[in-house]
Length: 250
Image 1 (cartoon, rainbow, N blue to C red):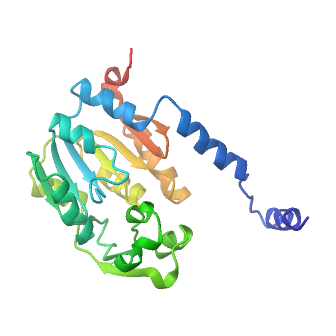
Image 2 (cartoon, helix red, strand yellow):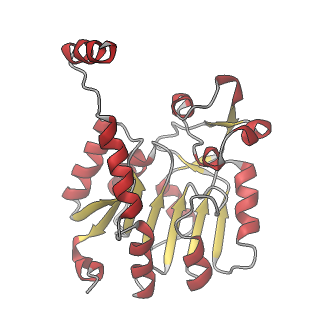
Image 3 (cartoon, rainbow, N blue to C red):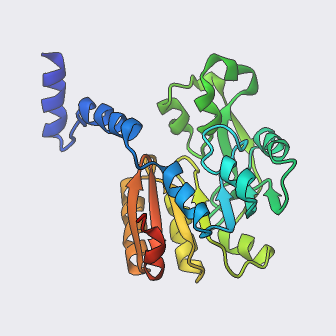
């Protein structure tokens, strides 16, 4: 009865609670679905579509990483960006035997908005599961939402670069995959990249933590820039229209 009362009250103010079964069902379908991000990437690498990658938010290159095994198997050129120094050091160790890799201890920032990130204190990591390594965010509330106690969170100053300056720094004229996982900042990066670069890679970014208006702007811009897109798990796969033939699985 109390839940129904709260639900009606919130709806009276224009809010709508998401059915918890919807969230559980979506996760269940994703777990059993044949078509996963790994399957998409495997197809791309087998077809020779991906030879040069920029990965933003690379973490340590192991936990919840979608390209680790493909990088080690196919040896593409990769520019890794990871701003948290402890993760960055582990990232370099993880790929120590690989060639064609560039490591940048940087965060991507649009118009110099990002100066620091929030993360779980190193001495508190053991309290939580492995997932907390990957929830570092510019948004303090993002960690709270994931059940992290306030006094277990620390702010770390980070070095930043814009996506445009990163491309200029490494004299990149073409690359095949832009992979973004920045716990909510993904949409701003996508918009900035599309507005300031004519390079047309496949773009894969996590959408679940992006604010609705930013995601809406991202998708409209992708459409205007002649990309088609679809979601797999918690990611949106964006593909240039002119390369549509490469996405076919038959």
